[in-house]
Every structure is written in structure tokens, then in C-alpha cells.
Figure (tube, rainbow, N blue to C red):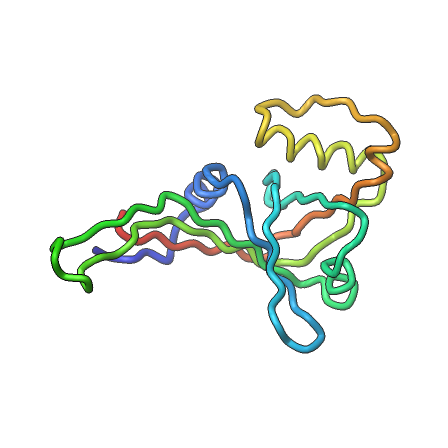
Length: 154
């Protein structure tokens, strides 16, 4: 059983596509990690996210827009020997996307971002939105500078 750290771009996309949630890691001014789960869309090397208007995340991102998104899927408990605890392990596939957050402010670009997210979950990205919904949502994207992944047990 060997871990791989050099997955391909195609494998990165496959892993991300299988995940329902990603975890976005940010940094507090005190140096503590701050991690939140998000629904997302991934398109052309950027991770699209949305949220309500407020929250600590936006204060942190205004101070430091560097972030990392984590994805993990295909978890499966395995054992080499049923009666030996140390022989148990989890198979998994995971990806980390490193980069910086860019806020999306323009109305039409917000709709595009939301449709990228909706395409992931609803299978289509041609939705219509009313103005209050668009004006009351924050959309943003992680511009990916580095993608890395690992598989174990596959």
C-alpha cells in the first residue's frame, strides 16, 4: 500500500467533482487557522463560493486573502488482519488548493459564480435570480496558485 503525492490535473478534477463540501482554511491575525465548510463550484482552475453578507471569514479575508481549500473523498476502512488494531487504515483521495480569495462584486459575475455552484449540485447552470437575492449574497473565488493531492490505498 503506497501513498501517492503526485496526482494529475485530471485526478484533481475527479476528486473535487466527487466531493459535496470543501473546507476553506484562513488565518486569524493571532495566527490561528479558521476553517469553514462550504458548498462550491470548481471551474477553469478557480473555486467559487458563496455566503451571507457577514461573518468573521470576511474580516479575516480582508486582513489576509490567502486561503487553502481541502477536499477528501472515497473513504473506506480496510484491515490487513481483523484482530490487529494497527493493521486498520482508511483508503482516501484528497486535494488541497492553495491561493488567494477574490471577492466578486459585479452583478452579472455574481450570477455566473452562482450558476457555476448550482451546476455542481443541480446538474445545470442556467438559473434565473431576482435582484434582492443577488444583492444579499456574497460570492467569491479562490484563485488557485497551487494544487496538490494525495491518495492512499488506491
